[in-house]
Image (cartoon, rainbow, N blue to C red; front, side):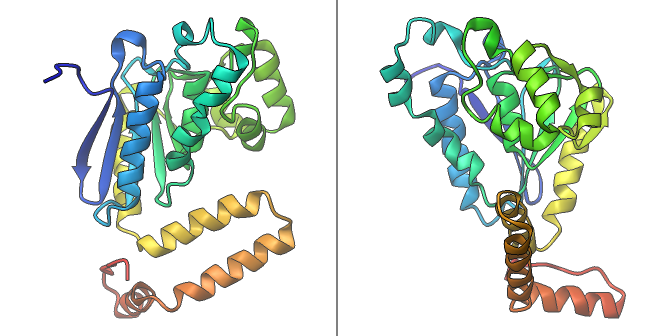
Length: 260
């Protein structure tokens, strides 16, 4: 039996909430292929777990994730890089139907920044920093660091980050729109879990539809996106949770959503 510690830890800190924690501290949570595979496996399972309504993704107290594992990249050739198909490992996170909250302490560099951007909400500590430093080692972001970044912060800030390789502070990331909420470093995980608890209390069908429509609408024309929104909203009127939510509002009581 192997004594190797798991590279990703799974916890259940509250009802309806799963906490996924990167666990490679000796390597500053560098995203090795093995770690990425464990991460993909967890997200694949959580996507189908009806007991989970929101997921928190975090790293350590000092570092979220340092990026790719350079020791496995330095001598790789183009075909080897292509055949790794890391996009397939990230697909379960990217396509997770449930809301994902990233809790970021310390630095989220390279692949770590790209991983954080896969989350729907980013809670960052005041001491956190974000960076796409790939240009400094002769390459460029390859797992969404150009495309998701420009959608999050706009062209000029994305260009600055990608072309200089310099980090930006959590405050600057918050001002630019990359970070959802900025809190003291020692409050990051509690804030993220409490936020996830609040989301987990909401009707899960509505949460999933909101996430799906926002993401799909970002790359569609306004008219097409509005059509998606109208149809998704109408669909929710077929759910029991819609009836429960509106009746609870009328009755002046707290609703109990079942996901039906």
